[in-house]
View 1: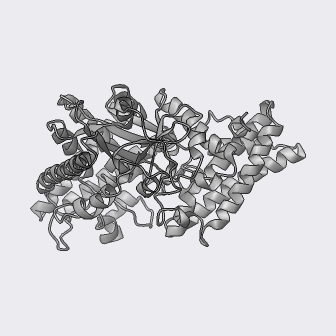
View 2: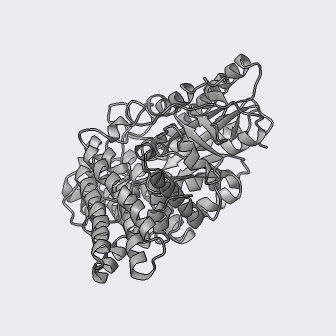
View 3: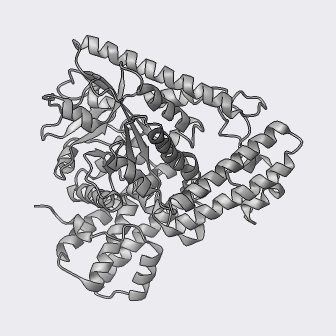
Length: 528
């Protein structure tokens, strides 16, 4: 049974986000096969399967989960669902060719067969069990109380950049909440700040929508005024009543450098998609000359040609789960002693891709964390909402500006490689606020134009594009998509100014840009 009376609680928050890569037809589905499809295969489906396993075995668990609106829009898109099944089928065909190629090597051949079996299982789960719809499955576990879903901004916008244009922050939050209600039919308690970007008074925007809490990076919490008496081991409140939790700063680095780096785990950087001759990859590439990642990775991380062994990796995942819980329980026990036996908690928040996509055995590790935590009395898995329910009066603080990007302040989102993006996006935002005020009662063709402009602006504000430019990863795609969004917005703006709208252009653009079909441009209007 769940140890609800335990005063040492562990909150695990997974943040699942994908940039909206649906807008440029000639790059689809190539861009999906680089990130979205591998993430569905390695992280999102295994997460659901993990939850089903725990439920079947009667293991209580608590997981907090952020499913960004752009990720939800992609997972709900029939085009994505169709292309994903085709992608799986091409991988299975590649696996059959690999069986023939590796038939003289029993270890490799057995591993290939295992990969093929797993791909077939995921295909059946996705297509037949879920009908291509993963979001309702997540909603089921949220309704059962095992999963707490947090809302987030519509397009993962770095909100501190718009602190001087409050209507934009409101619009991002409001559209995020509309997405949450559309896909999960529920009212969230928590709000995830994209990239944990916090700046003074942003809590006012969050709290006005009835949200109860948010999570900020540890340095933003610990540099608060006044200093938090319990450090990051207990929540606090802002002046307007919004509760804030400080993130445990050690968990993300521990997962990458301590657990995921064990030599028995699978080497995610060696893939036959980049190691075999292109002729051996034809079943997967289907005539495309550009090499791509596959799921066929055969080696461990010991810097030698040691064939990966699932059983050995599973055993290590169990040991690492126990180590993780021991470390967290010891740290919470020490914090409780220092705080005179007060109730304490640790909020471990990190990118969902760290489990599965980056660390192949990560979901197995997480399952073992839940299974072992359910048997312990010194630590219990919980959620931020449960902690708030059992907390008394919370200390009032003013958090310090912070982010989980760059050196802790989001500076990589506004440097010489990408600052021009913000210039255009901010000007478009000012114009959108003006349009929402001037055309507040319009309907028909003008309303369609304004709704399209709102969607294009939201997309242009995504933090994904400056991050890609800064990192030099898919930078040309990010540049092209951003320019397309700004051009689409500008076309609407100029058309409304001249009172001449091309219905042909509008219809075509709406078709190629199905993001947020429920959008209402009035979310950018000034709030009284």
